[in-house]
Length: 573
Image 1 (cartoon, rainbow, N blue to C red):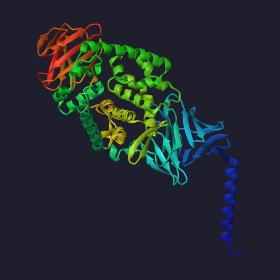
Image 2 (image 1 turned 90 degrees about the vertical axis):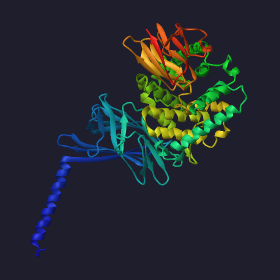
Image 3 (image 1 turned 60 degrees about the vertical axis):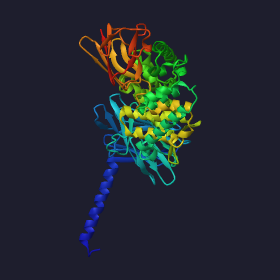
Image 4 (image 1 turned 90 degrees about the horizontal axis):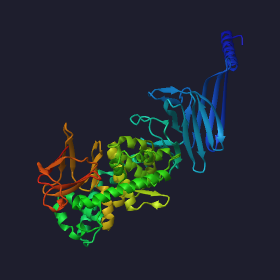
């Protein structure tokens, strides 16, 4: 001992310093950690306090559940995103178990997180509550154990282990810079973390590179359906239905064979009393069929009132509903109905309801954006509903619900809604998804389709073919939204200082098209071919253009025989 006095002295000094440090730590600090369990959710809370003034310096929270860990601490705080985009760190304060399956976690700035555990489904649901001045609540998360992140898209993150797969259905905070952040928005109905079958788990983004999602495969499918439609119609007896006839006319017109198609239509069909306004743009009878057009509008208004009273979301599936809202914009019932989905607590549409809502939203977005905004809060839920109904089987995308796989017409309707949505929001993801849906169910089976089914399918797959009858919004006028029911490729609109109107109609040279203009104010005179024209109730029987104006319905009924591809109609007021 006496041989090393310096070493002994230094050892004693180190011992005394350690003892003093431990005393000070015990005197001034207290670090308590507690773990509790709700089902398989492990909740670890660490309280780190300074006893001198009993003020919390740093409390931390860790939630661990089947492959995911969510944290809130001084190093990785929960953040409140304010309206200006800035992030404010939050301090975890306390928590309590409010039921056998639910925990409520409280943070500074009057913010809380509710977590619901469903042990039967092996899932979590997250709900946020925060002040109205904020837009989102953000937590950091990470994979736990042998789980890793196998996929991260704009709308979801997939956690995978050797045997299990879970999906966190949460949008990325910044799609251009993906990070592991749980983002809860003010208008979010709740974020879920749930298991999926690894064989069936997919997202619309994940199928974008598959064969049936490609433009080439989709074009081949559309061409095959069109070929089958033309062949089936030309081999059918003369007593064919109206939808098939109109589809045939549109398909042939898209291939520059309109005159040939018209020559095949039997006179008995053109003159049949059962024909509707659907075929009016090709075969006329405008006065009679406009009355039907107006009567259908009145009937839909009554149905709309009933749907509002009954809160019936199936009304979204009504054919032509988006067109009706555009043509009759100004009806006070329209916004009341469009608000229904967002006002439904725990909104969970069926797959077909989701597709219909998306389709109506897409129709309104570029023309009546104020109406589309009423559906905006539920669009992500609708997209996710369709996405969750999809499974990949032998390279094809199959859509189904609890009743089983959807039939061909239902599936194509859903795929067409996704393509229309992609056109409205300019997203290649949903273009590919819609193409994948349609090609998967149709490709290789086109020869099996009957003429009536083809008549139903063609308008869904030919939204970009102007030769299929459609509603065209032209302009907003004091008399209402000026719209045309037409097969013209384009109708342009101009006014002069005297509020006189010039309409330019694009249609193949030498062909006739019939147009119903809605909400057209009465005019003083009209010029066609730069010549003043008078109204004549027999105008459709002449080998010339002509018109009738219906004052009661404020409709201009026009027959346009094209002596040039672009014909000009002038209305003088």
